[in-house]
Length: 626
Image (cartoon, rainbow, N blue to C red; front, side):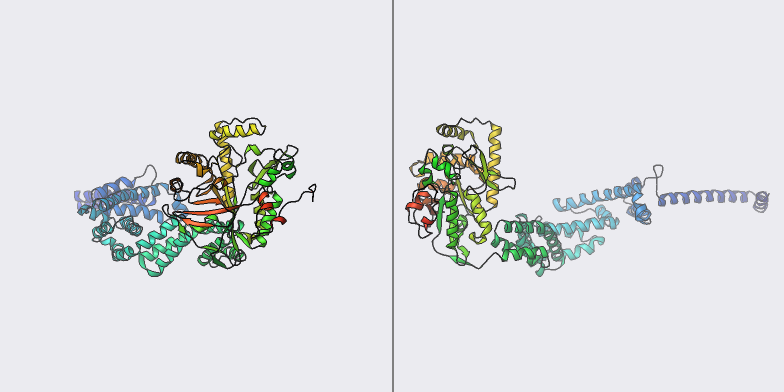
C-alpha cells in the first residue's frame, strides 16, 4: 500500500516526469550496489572466478597510464599488507599477481638499463616517463642497479667513462635523485680505492685471507661513504668465511709440529679475532714450542741413508750377508744416529728453504733461519723404490698406510709372514722421535725422499715400463713373475699417491733419482731427455711437483752443462751429489748440495766425528765375536 501511495504522490505531483525520476533513482542504486560489491571483491582478494589484475596492469603500462598501473599494484599490495603475516602468506593468488606485475616492470627496467650500459643508449621520453611514473617499483630496481655498478667499478669490472655515462642518463629522473647524486659524487673516491680493493680480492681468491683482511682494514680506515660501507660488509663476509678453515689449518700445523708457521698464522688470526678463546689457546700451544730464531751463515750438513734393515737375523743369514750390513743401517743404528744428532744440537730443516723457486728463470738465495743454538741438518732417504732384488734380505718390501693413515713399512719375517710396522723404516722412526722431541725439527721439516722409476715406486709397480724390470729382478731373487693389468696399475698408482700425500702432509719432500737410476754424468743428452721424460710422465704425477734431483752414486752434471740446463728448464733446480764434508753452492738458476752417505760401512770406516761418535751407533749382536 505504501509503494502505491508513493507512486501516486510522484505521479500526482510530477506526472510522467515523476515516474522517470523514480526509474533513474532505482537504476542508480543498482549501479552503486554493483560497484560496491566489485570494489569489495577487488580489495579483499580474488579466486579463480574473480578478476585477474595482471592483464589490466600490463595494459595500463603499455598505454602509458602509469598512475592507473600503480593504483592496481598498490590495491593488491594493500590487501596483502593489511593481513597478518600468517594470512598474507596464504594469499597465494594475490602474491602471485604481485610477483607477475613486478616481473613486468623488472623486464622493462633491465632492458633500458642494459642498453644504457652496453650500447650507450639515451633513454627516450617514453622510457623516462615509465621510469619516473612507476615510482617505488622502478626506484628500488634502478637504485640497486646503480649501487651494483659502483661495486663493479670498485672491482674493476666497468670503466669510469661507462659508469659516468650511466649516471648522467639517470640523473634527470626525479625519483632517482636520492641515489644518483651521492653515488655520482663519490665516483672519484671509488676510483682511488679500486687498486687496493682488487688486491684484497685477489688475495682472498688465492686463500691468503690474512692479507685480504689487512688490506680491507686499511681501505676502511681511509674512506667513508660507499667505499666504507662496501668494504665493511665485505670484510665481515671474509671474516666469517676464513675463521673455520684458518683455525683448522693452524691446528693441523700444531699436529704436524709446524709450530713456527702456526705461531705466525695464529698471531694474525688472534689480531682479527681478539676475543676468540679457541684461537688464543691454540696460539699459546704454538708459542710454547717456539724459541728465538737467528739467521744461520755456516755449513749445512746433508746426511743420506737408504732404506733400513728391518730384520737383522734375516739380513745376516741372507745370501748377501755382510754386504747388506755395510750398505744399509739397521733400525737401531738409525735411532742411535738421530738421537746423537739431537744431543749435538742439530735440527732438521727443509732442503728447499735456502732457495726461492717462484721464478723459472732464476733462483733466489734465501736466508736460512734456525732456532737459536741449533745447527741445520738435511736428511735424505735415497731411492725408496724397494727393488725385488733385495727380497729375502731382511729389508722392507714396500710402504703402506695403516688404519690411522700413517705411513708404515711392510717386510717379510723369517717365518715368511708379512709384518706391517711404523718403526722398521726411517720414516716412522723419525716421526716418532719428533713426537717426543719437537725441537729436533724446525717448523715440521722431516727430510727428502728420492725415488726412481726403476721397477717400482714405494714398492708398487705403477707403469707398463716397470714390469719387465720388475720381473727381471724377481727372477734374480728366485720369485715368480708378476703380470698386472691396467686396473691393477691404476690401483697401485692410487696407493702411491695416497702415501705421497700423507708424507707431504707431515713435512717430507720428494726428489728424483732419475727414472732408471742412471749414471747421469756418463749419459748423453738423448739419454737424459728420455729418462727425464719418463720420470715426469710416470712418477712426478704421483708425487706432485718435484724440484730436486738426488744423483745416483753422486754422479752429478755440472750446472753449466747443456744436460743440466735441460734439467733446470724442466723444473729441477736443487741437486744433490756426494761428498765427505758439508758443502753447498748457488749456481746459475740452481742450488747444489753434497750429501754424506751414512751406512754400516761409513759408520765403521769414515771419520764422522764432526757429527757424532760413530762407533757408539753401531748395533752389536749377541753372537758377534768381541
